[in-house]
Amino acid sequence: MIPIRAGRLLLARPLLDDPHFVRSVVLVLAHDETEGTIGVILNRPGRALTSPSQPPLSDWIDTATGPRVDFYGGPVGPDSFTCVAQDPASPIGFRTLDILSDVPSQHYPHRVFRGYSGWGPSQLDDEVSEGAWWIVESHMDDVIDLEPENLWNKILQRQDSALRRMGHFPHDPSVN
Image (cartoon, rainbow, N blue to C red; front, side, top):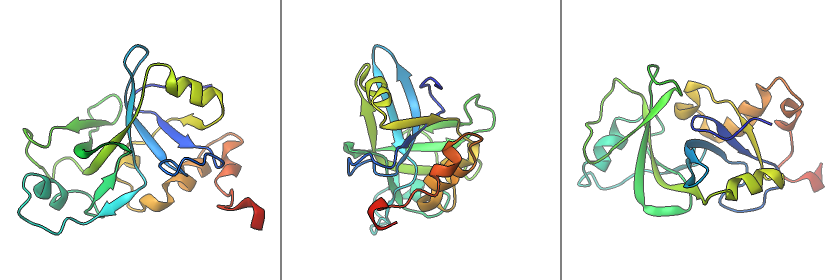
């Protein structure tokens, strides 16, 4: 089994029925045995902000890689925002940016996430052991994939293992 660490992806197994995480792809931003794990869901585009008077948030979304919306990052902190940027210089392929102190830039393709996903110490390890998640390596482009709704299938289908077949798992196996 691949260990959990920053930069890896958590793929919800098909039968995980938590409505927050059905077929989700979570990018692990930080993992610590004593502090827990935080991440953002990469494949849940949200809604476009309708008020241009919400800088700096609107500035970040206006310069984001399309679709230019705030993505649903997870059920924790629904009023908080995290910006994740592709960064080839980073050993994990991305970095988080502070929406309040950093300046939006076209130099780093990025996405904005509303809320985040979080697990207490050993909570995610227990969920992985119970079969709720697969852990796989990420590609730098996963953060800004232009078809986020298809990311779960796409990541599974690029695996070299038996996981590849799971990319074709039906949404409702009872009608298969």
